[in-house]
Image (cartoon, rainbow, N blue to C red; front, side, top):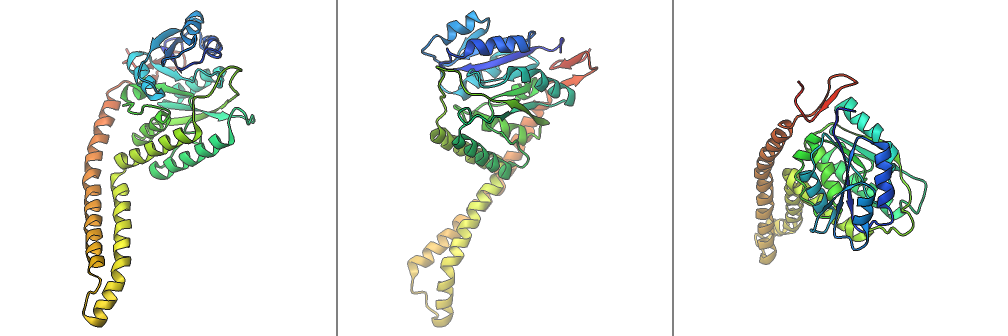
Length: 321
C-alpha cells in the first residue's frame, strides 16, 4: 500500500474525551495515512486535542454528520478513504485488512460490521432499529449489508467523488448504502470489534428521533430510486379502495337501476382517477430516474478506479503509467 494515498476521515462533535486516542490508534495502524478531523461546532476542547495528537483539523459550521461528510468528501484528495467516528468505539487495527480487501477485490466500499457482546456499547434498541432499517433497504433495493448503519467504512476514490451527499444528519449512512446499491458497486463487509465509549464521551444519536429520520430518508430514496414501484403501490391501494367502495354500488345498480349513494359514487370516481394518475406518474418518473442513474453511472465511470497492477504496486485513483 506504499503507493496509495490514504486519508482517515473523522467527523467530530464534542469528542474531547476520545479523539486523541482515535487519532493515535489510526496513526499506529496506518502510519502512511493522513489523519483528518472535521469539527462540527464542538463546544469542548476537541479541536485542540486533535491538533495536539497530530491530526489536520477542518471546520464545518452546518450542523449534522451528513453536512460534515459532504465537506470531507469534497475537500480531501486521496486514493483510499477510511471513515470512522471519533468516539473510540471502532477498532483501528481492522483498517489495514479492510483496505487490503478493497484493493485485492477491486471494491468501492468495505463496511466494518460491528461485533460486540457488550450491551452497553450497542444497545438493544439500536440493534433492533438497525435490523429493521437494514431489512427495509434490503426489501426495497435488493442486496444489502447486515450492518447498514455502521460508521466505520473504507471507500475508493471513485465512490467518494461520485457520492452526491444530500443527507444532513445521521441518515447519511443510509444514503451511502443506497448509493452503492443503486450503482451496483462491488462492496463487502468485514467483522470488526465494537466497544463502549470511553468515560466522559456521550452518544449524540437519539434512538427514536434519528430512527425516524433514517426511516424517512429510506422512504424518500425509495420514491426517488424506485418511482414505478412507489407510485404503483400507492395507485394499487387507491384502486383496491375504489373497488371495495364500488362493489355495493354496482350491486344496488344491477338490482334497482339506481345509484342512491351519489357521494360514494363520486368518491369512487375520484379514487379511480387518482389511482390512474399515480400509476402514470410512476411510469414517467421511472424513465426520468433511469436517465439520472445513467448520468450518475457515467460520472462514476469517469473516475479512475483501483487497479492492482501487482501485489506490490497497486494503483488507485490515477491512470496507470
